[in-house]
Image 1 (cartoon, rainbow, N blue to C red):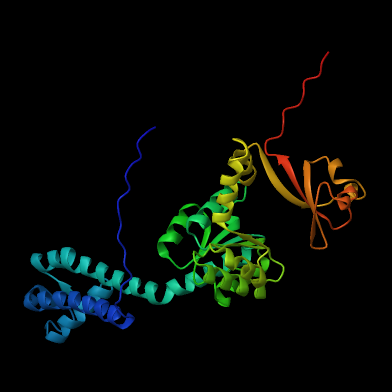
Image 2 (tube, rainbow, N blue to C red; image 1 turned 90 degrees about the horizontal axis):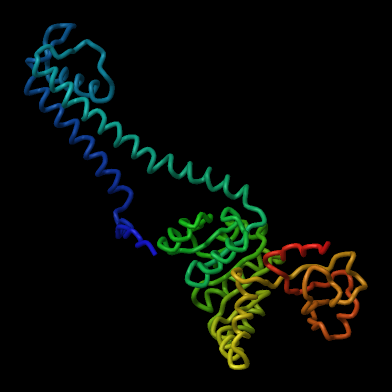
Length: 347
C-alpha cells in the first residue's frame, strides 16, 4: 500500500479582537503609509515642480501625496528630478497599491462579505429539497454521511449541522453542504429547510442535546422521518416521546451482533451485511404497490418479505395479516444489492 503524504498541521484560533480595533489598525496602517510618502515628498520637495505658480508649499506636498496615493495625479504638480521620479515609481506606486488593498479588504470584510454570504445562503436554501439533514458530525454522524453516499445519495443532497469548525471542515471535505449553528434552535433548522427535508439524522454526542434537537425538529416538521442515536437505554423512551421515528442505541446493536455470533459464526456477519452497503443484500422499506394488494407477503417479487406495518402495528411474515396485503401497508424486505446475472438459456 502506498504511503500517504503527510498533511501540514494547521492551528487556528478565533481572534478575540473587536471590530472597532480591527478598523483602527487598518486605518492606522493606511495613514502610516501615507505619512511615509508625505515625509519623503516634503524632504525632497525640491524635486517637485508646481506648473501653476512654480512654488511648492507644504499644502502642495500634502495635495500631491494624497492625489498620487489615491489616483495617478492630475499633472499640476510633477516630479522633475531623477530621484523624485524613482521614488514615485518604486515608492509611491507600491504604497498606492497597499492603501487600495487595505480599503478594498476592509470594504469586503465589513460590508460585502456579509451581503455575498446572504446571497449565497439564499441560493443554497432555494435549492434545498428532499435532502438529508445530519445534526452532529461526530463518529456516528460521519459514518452515517459516508453510508448515505455509498448508498447513492449525492453529496449535494446532504447537509451537516454542527457548531464545531473542525467537524464542519471535515464534512465539507466530503462535498456535502455544511451549516454552522446550534441544531436545537428553531432558526438553525429553519435555515436548513427542515420542512422540505427527506429525513433527519440526529447524533449530537449527548442524549439530552439529541432529544432536544428531536423535539425542536418535530415541532417544525411534523412529517419528516427522524432517526436519533442515544447512548443510554433509559433515554430511548424519551427519544420516542420527543418524536423520533427510529431510536438507535450503538451499545445495544453491538450487543445484538455479539450475542448473535454465539449462535453461529455467520449470523453476525449477515446482520452486518444487512445493515451496511458493502454486502450483497440489503434491507428496504417501501409501500405496497397496487399490483400487490390482495396477495400474501410471501408472493412479492421484488425481494424476500419480512414484515409489514399496518396502522402502526407490525406483523411478521408468519402472521395471519401477512396473508393479504392491503392499501397503505409498509413492507420491509430483503433485496439483492447487486442484481444477479441472467441465467444462460440452454440450447
